[in-house]
Length: 394
Image (tube, rainbow, N blue to C red; front, side, top):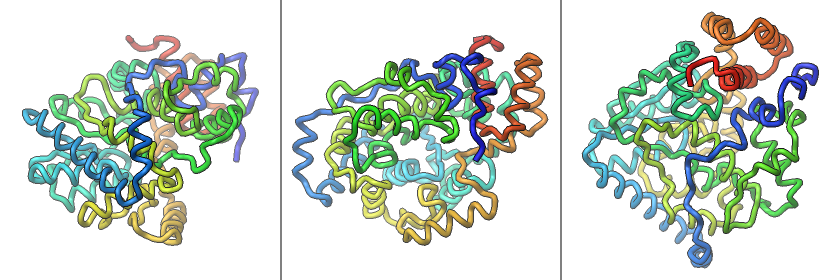
């Protein structure tokens, strides 16, 4: 593994705030646009008295209620599900199909062919018969127009390339856009089986889970991070809570729940309260989440899932491992939506950096490439330059 060269990534070039952005793709001191419901401690304690089966029954009841309520409340608008290769969008779609016919639901999958999100999302739509659009993302996202439109919608707070071609998304501006953003984290995607640890270890774990690649841990300032971490006002601070109130609200939701659109998320009070009542061991690897949906929705496991590397959700650990190895051998890395390594080799990438970078900055980008820095790190750097230097109209 290559290391982050301190001669290239050093404090003479970047301050602590910028270093964090380079290593993670977002500003830690940014305002979280998504405000999470404050957990109800008394309700959580009541839920803790229930067994696993009762938890599952409550979970699917709350999940259905949330979707049915929102569907009825917003019945004058068409519905769009951003269909990825994960669990949440699939579960949202299955519940919506209880309310209306498949041909009345729009689904959209975008990404690079070969990525799990792109391939699996398309398979699910074809199987269920939705009104589906598949968008193959190419280097058109590297245009200044696209960057500007996306940046305005995220308050220029994260990496500016984590999007599909924006003009295509504008076709759905008047739709209800259903998203499982962040709810999967409450139910095990980042849950820690041993949540109790001292503050230093918690920050170490937070850093480990935020950096785009472990090689960039060394460039971060721990004191800066401690100073700028948000905490929940009623919950004991754990790695899980830190993740929810920082990365998920400042990065994940900021670049997924765009301001100009009508997004419907699954962050209801009862679903959040229930999540904190379930034993973390049951939430590990999203086991509770997977079991609840598999038992509730018929044929939920018919198509593989990104969570299990393309294997079916109920497959054995050995099968999942074989799928993971197979993906790597075929060159299909576990990448979300885009093949970043190909993006930075494109002609449009060269055009972009010549438009927004000085000669000195271009030379530094070339050094990043020569030293095999992570492609996302390079895109973080260009995003930072655009934001910092106001190279586009903000």
